[in-house]
Amino acid sequence: MQSYLWLLPFIACVNCVPFDLLKKEYLDYNYLEVGFIDLDPFAQTWVSVKTTTNLTGEPIVFISIPDVAAILNAPWYTGDSTLGIPPIVPKLRDQPTRNADGTYSFEFNLRTVNDSFCNSEWWVPIEVPAGVASLTVSWLVARRGVYSLVTNYTDETFNTNVVIDYGNITRASAAPQATNDNGNAIQFEYPTGCVDPSLVCTVMAAEDIPGFSRDPGSIQQLQTSNNEVDGQSMFLSVRAWQVKKRSIWLVLVPHDSVDPAYFEITTPEIIGFMVFPVGQRVVCTEGFAFETMTFNNVTHIPIPLDFRFTYDYAPGVFGMLGSVFSMVDSTTLSVYDRTATSAIFVTKEDQCVSEQVIHTTPEIVHVLIFGEVTNSDVVPQNCSASFTPPNQCLTVEVWK
Image (tube, rainbow, N blue to C red):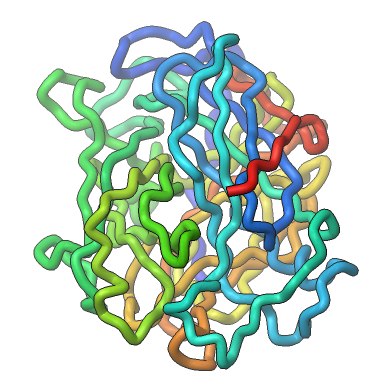
């Protein structure tokens, strides 16, 4: 039976302004921007995105989960749609760069398991003519820090904090376990200073409901492509081993390989992560809304993701696997059939070592959804953010 970690709806505050818990100030500037972009999911090009507003501080970028069905059902897709496609992960070329006008630019693309360490017996890359394929994904740029959307008050038992941070991540070995001791799970403590300069900030559910965990949810995105294979950015995904009140443990996951050395990733990548309370449901005066969820028992069997808002069009779905209950096979999260009210997601293994792709071990999934909402029963509040609807973002392709 599918179980959901829902918490009480986020309580809107008409006159609230997000509060920077580290600088101890209300925000009079944007700390977050969301947009959409069309790109070729199979091209070996880096797509450039420029924010529309001045995001002060250190920006961290996140890319939504690509909609696999949008590829399989496209008229330009020449493969057998009944066989599906291998896992796809968004990759940033490097950390964002600041422009002269105060905006930021970053480059990213989508990577499939297409290199010499992957057996192509069961998967042959589809050749699509340049300029034909197109897929819409969402991007999110957020300023590094710890913020509260409701109040400047925070303590160990009640808060609505959101942590946005980054750090270096590596992987020690091909061992099919992630632990504190074996070097495969890397711990990142949240910043200090929300309550006391010496205490680590906390993130948790705003309400304690019997029978439900108060552990937060998270999304992640590699900010660099420091590791390459065959002259191309290496296929790398990231899963959470644990997402807790004061820290998060993350695991770097390449595609499967018969070569154990392929899993020894000693050149650090920079991983960005956002940790948030589960159950938030917020409408922003800037013209968009967002919601957060956590799901248990997610496998290869399709799971319906019913949005709590009715969006004006299919929203951006950001998410990650929040567990490593099974690491024997490389596994990623896939999204299908996004609409204004719902989506479907599954876990999927690659075919680099074996033919089967089903992942039968139940995993945890964290989801963050951003989209435009015209009509809602939730009172809007100031989110100190900017929202760029689809087809309003300039892009430039850079050949590597």
